Every structure is written in structure tokens, then in C-alpha cells.
Amino acid sequence: MLKPLSDHDLARLHARFVVPIIVDQILKDQEPLDDIAEHAINEILFEFCPDTALLCLAMCARHIADATAHLPISRALVIQCDQIVEEYGPLWLAHEQSPEKLDNQAVKEVLSFIPEDLEALRDLLDATLGALDEDHCLAAILCDVLSFQASHHCGLAERELQNINVRPQSRPVVDLAKRHGNVIPFPLAVRASRLLSRG
Image (tube, rainbow, N blue to C red; front, side, top):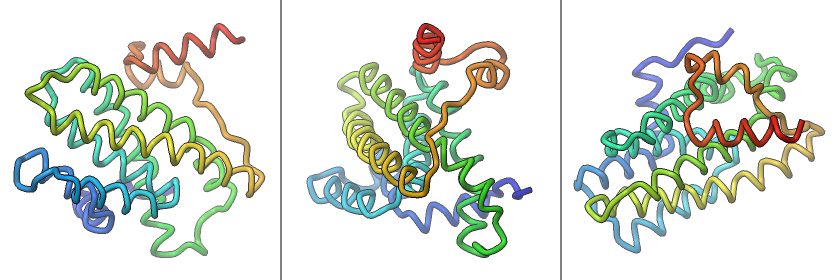
């Protein structure tokens, strides 16, 4: 059983990934969002493996959710980001410290959800982008950048899972309902209805 993330662990992940710190500073007007900054963010994220990218993107998106807390969609974004960080953060740190001690089967099971989690995060970033007004152009640009990266890494994740003979999995709809008190935030509700209609 992996230990939940502490505040120290979260700060450590921010420092390791760098991009969440940059995003936070941009949203607080402590750093400019110019072509150089946007290029740097994309370059760093392109270099990450899909699991690292997912965790990093969720941490970045959490800052956007905090900066756009006035939007109803931001609550759903907070829930999704926190779920990703809580699930993948301890695993990422444990792998960095002692990869030989991890249960390979358990790791593969977690990794099988990466494509779907990237898709869910992308959908929420797109929905947030659509809800933003001109007063939040920095957040809108960052949503666009992060959404693009989520789509990019989703494709990579699916190919990498094929290479290690792991089939991408979908999270049971009932689990989402229980987790959020029978209220599945958009766009998860839309995705859930699509899954049910296919069945």
C-alpha cells in the first residue's frame, strides 16, 4: 500500500516537473506568457513519458481550476485533477525511489487507465476553455496548451500499453458515481452516457 501524498511530496513533484510552477506563476502574473514561455512548456511536456505527463498536466490544471474557481466547470476539474494526483503521485515517487519494490501487476493495472484519464482531463480543459471570458485569456491559452498535450500523450500511452501487452481500461461508471455522491461532473456524465449507450 502506497502512502498518500504529503504537502512535502506535492512540493517535490512541483519542483521535479517545473511546469506546474511556471503555470502557477503565469496565472499569478509573476511570469509572462509569451511565445518563449509557451514553447518551453510544450518542449518540457513533449519530453515526458505519458504517465509523468498525466501527473504533471493534472498538477498544472489544478492551478487553472484554482484561478477560475468562479466557473461551475472548475469544480469538476478540481475533482479530476485531485483524483489523478492522488492515484499516480505516490506511484511515481515510489518508482523513483525503489522501482524494484513495486508490484509489476499492480503497476500495469494503474497504467491501463492512463489513456482514459488523459482524455477526461482533456475534455475538462476544453470545457473550461469554452467557459472562459476575455478577462481570463492567460488561463484560456494555458488550457489550450495543456489540452493539446493531453491529446498527444493519450496516443502515446495507448501505443506504449500495446508494447507491454496491457489493454487500456475504462473506469467503471458506478465507481465515479459513488466517489462524487451520485453526481458525475460534466464531461464525465456525457462520457458515461456514451458508454452506457454502447452497452
